[in-house]
Amino acid sequence: MDHDILDEAYRRLHRTGPEFEGWLSNHGPMTVEALVRRGHDRSVHRWLDDYLRRLDELPRGRRRIEDWREALGDPGRAGDWLAHFDRELREHPWPEVLGTWWPRLLPGIAAGATHGVIRVGHAVRALREGGAGPDRLTELGQALGYWAARWQPVPGLRLDAVSRPDGPDAATALTSVPRLDDRTGGIRDRLARLPGVPGWEGAVAAPRPARTPADAERGLVALVHRAALDYLRYGHEDPVMLVHAVTAPTAVLRTLPALDPALWAPSLTAAWSATAAVTAVYAPPRGTAIPAVTPGTPAEVFARAARHGDAHVVKLADAVLDAHAATGDERVLAAAGYAGQLI
Image 1 (cartoon, rainbow, N blue to C red):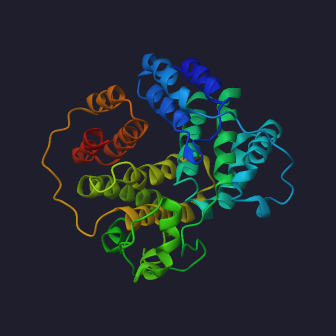
Image 2 (image 1 turned 180 degrees about the horizontal axis):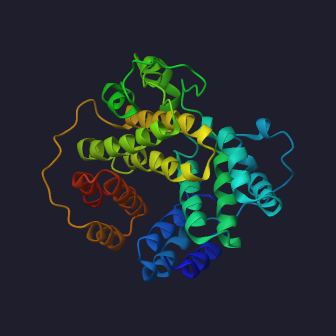
């Protein structure tokens, strides 16, 4: 992993805002981290030359964040949140800042169509593998600031709720997630309709809780694996948005090693809710059979995604390579190629 190229890319991107064209998420930092992590350093700046043309300027802060609870989920204060985390990371070690804010932000895991937590997951991986350089610290700060500004809970999610001890595991519970009938509008509109979906309240509370940190880690691995296979069944319905059912729990899984193990179980619960919500509002009631394909080696799978160039295809390929490494199931690798065909 060439950390110099990643830092150069971060510096170019950190002059841009976390969103553009009103509310679209800036995928640049996540994509360049994945490209560098997977050995495609040489393509990073060429990819950025094109992508940067689409982005908006970095929003400026207006006033300090005093009451953080009151400011959560206020996109009008995005600049204030970015400035807040810039100060926090200058004054405190990054694991301390992450450990303080992760439990505050986790209930709002739907932020920015889950891009808040996804961007944090990429930033944490860069820090853990490359050290706490200034550009990587800035990236974590901008990722946390974006999550805070767009903080949005999944309807019905309660991290302190006591689930049925005999309930299904998170991966199995995905099979019984009800579907939203009214598919109009964006993800924020759709999530707002979930409380009216018959069976949603029971479904979101269904998975049994993780009893130990190791149990939570295994649950996240299984959840990502199931979501990747489900992309092969359902991806045709909304190829872009259903990517997040895979990449959101992957981001949580990547962040676990930097967190207090006491936070692992609620992290699984939140990740489950994000995948369940994306599935409920974008996946069809019935999917197709998983095709029998030979996707190639992991390196070949990611190389095809990098040549494709779409940010969602690249990030999904990055996620399914992790899923393949954790489970050995080659079927998950096919999800990246399928996304490349659909997007």
